Amino acid sequence: MTDEYKVEEGIYYTKEHEWAKKLDDGMVAVGIDDFAQAQLHEIVYVELPEMDAEVSQGEAIGAVESVKAVSDMYCPVGGKVVEVNEELLDTPEKINNDPYGEGWIAKIEPSSLDDDLGNLMDAAAYAEYLKTVSH
Amino acid sequence: MKKTHLYKYHVEHGNVIDFGGFAMPVWYEGIKVEHAAVRNACGIFDTCHMGRTWATGPDVIRFLNYIVTNDVTTLEKNGGLYTVMCRPTGGIIDDLILYKISDEKFWVVYNASNREKDFKWLKKNSKDFDVKLKDVSDEVAMIAVQGPKAQEVLQKITEQDLEKVERFNISDLTVSGYEMMAARTGYTGEDGFELYIPDTTPENPEKALKVWNDLIEAGAVPCGLGARDSLRLEAGLWLYGNDMDESINPLEARLGWTVKLDKEGYFIGQRAIQKKKDEGISKILVGIKMEERGIPRHGYPVLNMEEEEIGLVTSGGLSPTLGYGIAMAYVPPEYRKRGTELNIQIRGKPVKGKVVKYRPFYDSSVYGWKRDK
Image 1 (cartoon, rainbow over the protein chains, first blue to last red):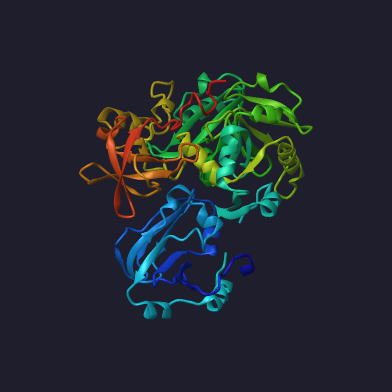
Image 2: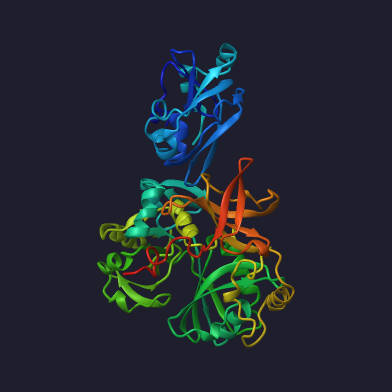
């Protein structure tokens, strides 16, 4: 069943189904992955992280909600929140349609990126992990 | 997991979960489209998991009047009566609908989650009455057809004129060529029918599946439990286990209108409810509309403007029709007035809301069975 979820190369994943992507300017974009959006189905609301908040890896920084369910968003890397995707307030379904692209949730100025990435899975490891995740 | 008559359809088309021991669909295409189909056109729900019992015999009216809080003697033939039944403590065992087929025959419909509990309670309390009780939940399929176009859709596969079935009444119909009963009621706030299809079981579901598929063919959208919950919440209808349970008195649940304290004879819970009425209640169910972004959910604390906890949300969600968060919650009676400002604590943060009319939350001239035609 894992084949039905997209796993994008070149980004890092958590066991709770968040992703982190290194950007050219040194910032890190974060969001929830294809598995998480598919489980939630029809996302209707996003509670965005607070701008300028100092966050640590694994800290709850926001939430993504469908009609039926709430999923906390845990920050995959520590640092400072420098940008949030305000478009999601009016079009939360972007997370369903494009979880690794237009559905990004925040950008983080990382404080200890190498250590944090060491705690995450790369695409290959994550694809293996997905196989162990039951429905 | 127990399977309903329509299980085959659910696994092929829906997202099936374990709901109180039943394999039921949360959604087929998605909650939002299914919700909209019922508010604007016609949706159908598998409600085979609900409880259905025949109560018959010379004492049936006296028996039911002893069991439930509402006055069964007011019912006319083919009429339906919404009521609750209580423990001697006044705690609500369940809410249910009684339909009078004749002076000696009643059709009793109750919640899926309480099927065994309710039937046992009825049975246990029937000893002193000349009544027979027969649980036929597995031998009768049940499908709800709901929405402003429910009549139009159902009419395409029904021989009788549905215009003649009045709101809350039950009638014999021939649908898809099968004889069955249908009640003009539902759990969505909209016009609609509940079909009770006899002589079909989860093992022999062909009749039920035929009606279900004919309804889809006639234009109905199959809907799962997700939309059922969001629709009933918008209509301000109680969900047993959330908005009422055995710790809640009907007066607290705003079900006083179903309690006829002056009806003839004693009924179970009467003294406790009378006492509560005399002493006054310490909490009451209210509807809350969110004034800020945020979705209230079951179990979230309700705070006053001083941010002191005063109650809990029993049902909540984003209203797909209204586009904002709505909730039902128990609060002390001094907060019951419409317009009262409150906070709901969402992930640790107080989010502003206010007490509003909630049965229904929507404008009933625009949505629901009383809407302007």
